[in-house]
Image (tube, rainbow, N blue to C red; front, top):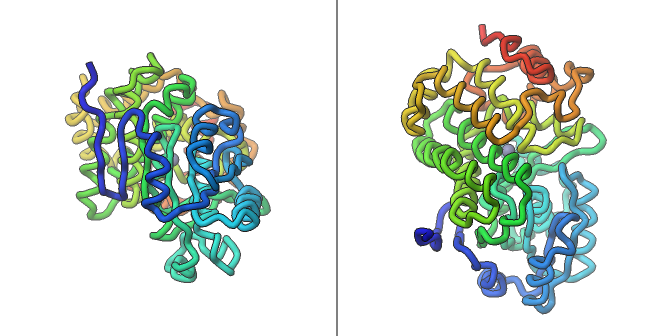
Length: 391
Ligand SMILES: [Zn+2]
């Protein structure tokens, strides 16, 4: 018998968690002040019963389903066109990370006059936005990984420069999140594993990022513990509602924690995703141990804390690294980027772009293009020993 898996939470935003709560979607829209919603979802979900049911429950709502993985400016522009021609007054961002990000950015851009790239997450660029022009969002995640449902940013690919840009505004945070584990039961095992590992990496990188943020640290530790306990269960049996509910919570916790910062894993994964169109969570899962090894001298004490919280059989840095490798094996995550179609031919560019990715600033050891290129090359070839370590 499952414990009670239902709750109404109010941080970092209003979250209605529990099986079956998608039935409250119309009420969520009403509370958020949305009467004519544009429902933004992933291309692969447009025909899904959960989307049909949502539209049936919302008179006045229309569907925008032209969102693919690693979404680009063209997806946002098409969504904006649909939003404006349909006379909508808010967005339901419904799906995986790509749909959530595009939905949030469409709502953000709906009342802006400046171009999208003016709102990249640099300094105080977000203050350029007109807050009155930001439409409300109700977010409905269908994967447990990105945590974008509780994030204040969207990651959008600039097709011209091949760079992923983070578009940020504090008001991009969805008004209400419906966190219903029943919506994630159909997610295939491999995607469950990849997205779940993204949640883990969010917690791990946030915990190891330098800076004073005990709130984020606490959330990150518990998030890692939930992934350890429940991701293998969710992969073994996709209909395990408790595991699905706990993983949705862990995903939201990861994104809450990474307000503190991310690190080298995401810094490398972003350009890899841009150039090779690989799945974000899977890319992170493959790269993780290589960055862990590189950061060894800076994270020894922190990995000891993690090893204790997770009650790992072997403690300290080595115990943690061994466990990460074992978890990846158990989840059938490939060991090398070459196994997911990534080659070393763009290594120099990847290193350069990773160095200017905003995530790089959160790495526990300062990293430059040369170091990131070396880590990337090691990850492509699957040779952990080729990482070396920070000098
Ligand atoms: Zn991520």
